[in-house]
Structures are given as structure tokens and as C-alpha cells.
Length: 254
Image (cartoon, rainbow, N blue to C red; front, side):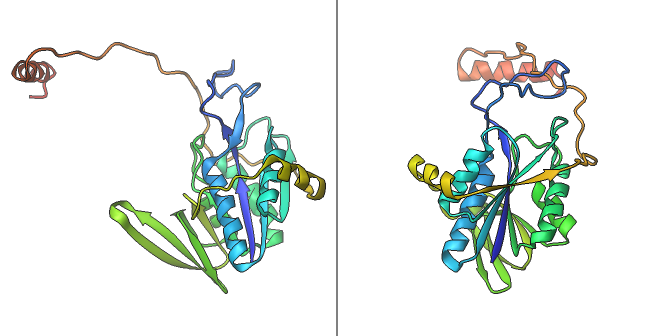
């Protein structure tokens, strides 16, 4: 089985985020990027499928600071092929542009299964998975928490509130949006990654132009202004209840 896993690097929310001078995007001149958490789970799920049933795993990422290190880490975990998309990404890359670029790439390699993270926390215009499935004319199932495969079919496991679990059978080729792998992404020692750097090769594919159409265009980005709107109610429970009723009456809610 041939499995492809597109990954995305996103801003590290632990860091303080600032807005660039034009006021429509984050300042990326110093911004630290990390692998999107759901994409990390997609890589782990792909490695698990390979370990159980054999096959090849290809991990694809757009050029960004730190991407090479993660690609080598994926190879240390068990990925077979590493692809880095290069080009002029100065104008940004939304989900629609990423899906089109990936579709052009994956049409040639024809994977049996494409695993994407179900979403990324910096996306405003949809997830790559369903867009990619539409472009490649493949079925899509999202929010998957486990995958098994047999011949030309895959079984996607979905978890719902209340402990309800559903299993969906999908005919391959297909695209799955991974919410969680069957186990947490594995840790790889750095010395193992260093070894892989000497034997694995990152293949570069140039993207000549990005089609950003269909995505969200930000006209303004700003930090929310703080304001004092909290009212502290003091007194006994009965007195607090009376105060709440009075406030609601003033607001015309009672």
C-alpha cells in the first residue's frame, strides 16, 4: 500500500504572536513554526499501517524553517520517501492553494491512501483533506481516530460523545482526516535522526505558482482590546439573586 501524508507547519501558540506592519497577517520574521499536531498524528497512523501490513509512506511538506528536521524525524520513525515543496511562498499558502499543489503532485504518484491532519489551528478557509479529496475525485472521511486496511478497502474508526464508536468502510483510493492516531506520536532519539540524515534524501519539488483563489482574504488583523465589563456581585445568595434579577430587568431581559 502506498500512503501519502501531507503535513503543515503552524505558529507555535506558546510564543507571543505579533501582527506585521500591514495589519493583515502575523509577523513571520521571527515566528517559530512547529508541526501541526493533527498532522503529527497522521504521520504516526501511516507508520502504524505500514508496520502492520507493509507498504510505503511518503511525507510531503512545504518549505519552511524546521521542515527538514521534521522530515528526517519522520524517516527515523519509518517513512520511506520525503518530499519538500519549494517555491515563492511570500504571499502565503492557504488551504485551497496547498490542496491544488498537492493534487498535482499526488496525481503522478497515485497513493492508495492519503492521510491529512483533520485541521490546523491557523486555517480559516477549510481543511486540506476534503479539498484534496474533491480535486482527486476520492472519498473523504474526517475526524478519524484509527485506521485498518484490507486489500482495496480501509476501515476508518470514528469516536463520538458518550463512548459511541463507528467504523466506516471506504473503497481505496481515499483521503482520511486524522484526529488522533491509535497511539501517541512516537519519540525518536536524536542520535537516530542524525543517522537517518546520512542515509535519507529529501526530494525537492518546485511549485511554480500558487492559486490562492477560493480562500479567505484577511482585510484586518488586530489583537482584541481589553475592557471592563465584569460586575462582581456581593452579599448573601438571596441578595445576589435579587441583584441579578435587577440587572436583567435593566437590560430588558425580564
